[in-house]
Image (cartoon, rainbow, N blue to C red):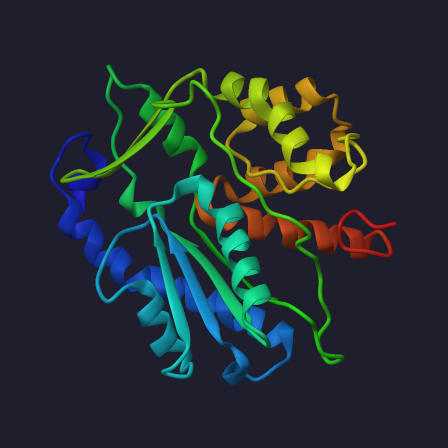
Length: 285
């Protein structure tokens, strides 16, 4: 569609026509892969959380996915729209809460993103939009989250604790707006410094209850907002280069896939640990 390549051409209808159909279909592929590896019948799935920043529709992509997979009509669904890069960790936090507070729950988490909703031509006065065009990519990932696994299940990771916070002076650093021209993103050049200047305080608040203060003693599934963010976080915390290896690999191979990135990085880390002959998924012991 030629209007996609212009900076301000009205094109939302054409973009929506694509993502409303293709986002659930892409999510289905990821979900089927996760269910196959899980090894349990899909009838055991009690909850579905579908996350996307690519388009909005009713009924939502969670409904479409339920139909595409042939899940039970009574499966409990939650649709997360327009959460951006924040969504990868958030969706796992919500799945953890659902799994721990509903006995026997098995939560299917699906993140599916297609950049046609954000792709646009350049503009000389808004060069920041080119950053997003260079970084963002398409992708979908899925995972099953549960509590109290049965012997037939083989858990890959354990979510011990989950927290979130607001970084001071971050208002307006990253904005996304759904307009006639599609989903527009604006990124300030200060984003890497805002993240790096607040990262240690956030980590201390999250990990001090667990008695952890050595940031090289834990494994890292850091969302790859961009190379500059990763470089500054690594420098600020004195991280060993291998700590962000999985994140950098996913960014270089697939780009920033918004909500799907965290699940891609989890998968990359567990595969690397297995290939290295290590005893656990999170960099191994």
